[in-house]
Amino acid sequence: MTVTRAFDRVFSASVTALALLVPLTLAGITLLVTIDSWPSLRAFGASYLLTTEWDPVKHVFGAAAYVYGTLVTTAIAVLIATPIAVGAAIYLTEFAPRPLRGPVAFVIELLAYIPSIVYGLWGFFVLVPFMRATVDPALQATLGQLPVVGGLFAGQIVGLDLLTGGVILAIMILPILLAVSREVLLAVPATQREAMIGLGATRWEAVVGAVLPYARPGIVGALILGVARAFGETMAVTLTIGNSSREITGSLFTPGYTMASAIANQFVEADSEIYFSAIVEIALVLLLVALVVNAIARALIHRTIADRPAGAVV
Image (cartoon, rainbow, N blue to C red; front, side, top):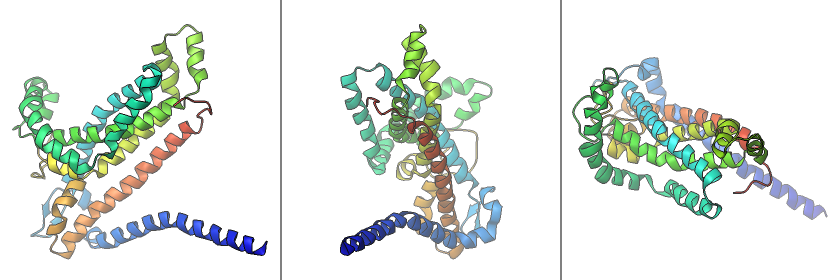
C-alpha cells in the first residue's frame, strides 16, 4: 500500500511538472524576447510605434508602417471571412441535410492544415495575377470613382499590395472562424429554436431571433481568434503584400509590410545590435497582442460552449 502511494505521488508530481512546462515555456519566450528588444525599447520608447522612419544606416527605427500594414490586412481579412464563415456555419448547423454536415465541415476545416508557404505560393502565382488583371481594375473603375471611398482604390495596380495580402489572410482564417462558429451554434439549446418556431416563426426567423443572439459571444470569440491568426501570419503575406513601401497611404493598392513580414524579410540583415533589437521588438509586440487577443477570445467562447446541452447533435 505504501509503495502504491509512493507511485501515486511520483505520478502526480510528474504530470504537474509537465503541465507547468507550458506556462514556463511561454514565460521564458516572453522574457527572452523582452531582453533582446530592451536596447530598442530604451532608445526609441513610444516613438517606435508612432513613426515610420526605418533607417538601418542611421540606426533610426519606427515601426508604425508595419503596424499599419498589419491592421489593414487583418481588417480586410476579417471583413471578407466573417460573413462567409458565419453563413456557412449557419447552413451546416441549421439547413444542411444531416448526412452532408459532417463531410462538408471536415473538408472546409482541412484548409487549416495546409502549410502557410503553400498558401503563399498559390497566392503569388494564382491570386496576385488574378487580382492585378481582374479584381483591382474592376474596383478602381467602379468604387475608385466615388468621392470618399475612391481613395482606397487609387494608385498604380501591381497586384502585390495590402488588398491581396488581406485576401490571402481571409482564406487562411476562414477555417478557424467556421469551425468555432459551428461549435458555438451547436451549443445553442434546442429549446431556443423550438420556442421561436412554436410561436409561429419561420426557420430563418428562429435563427435570427433566437440562435444568433444566444451564440453572439462565441462568434465574437471566433472572430477574435481569427484576428490573432491573421496578426501573426508570415509566409503567405510576405509573398503577396509587396514588401516595398514603408509609407502610410489610404490606398489598398500600395505594396507594404506587416509586422510578421518585416521580421521575415529583415531578420538576417540585422548587422548591428540596435537593428536586431528593433526587429525583436516587433516580435514582442506581436507576442503581447496574441496573448491578450487569445485570452479574450477563449473567455468569450467558453461562456457559450459551457452552456452546451449534453444531447447536442454534431
